[in-house]
View 1 (cartoon, rainbow, N blue to C red):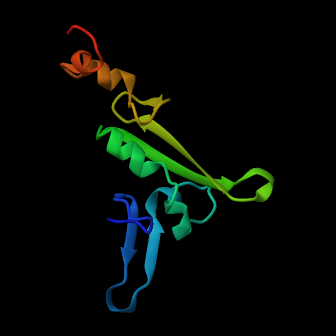
View 2 (cartoon, rainbow, N blue to C red):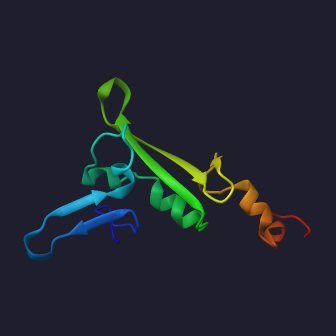
Length: 114
């Protein structure tokens, strides 16, 4: 679904059918330590960028919104983990290193000789 910032995000949900007024980010909803979501948070959200860079279906994401430095602004931090190998993914745009090693032909794309 297209989020308020104009980018495609599968975790954004809206419903305006028959008088409803529902807009939410479903990643923030599952994080207990996060501040409440606002439509402005979609503007610099890293989640759509990560999902465009990495199409691994086994990677799960979590988004936490917290106050910025001195309480000014809002910071968005993403944590990612691989459901297949049950490891935390350090670089979400690159993906799980174990999943990447299992893919045939990935060495060619990464500049190797395989």
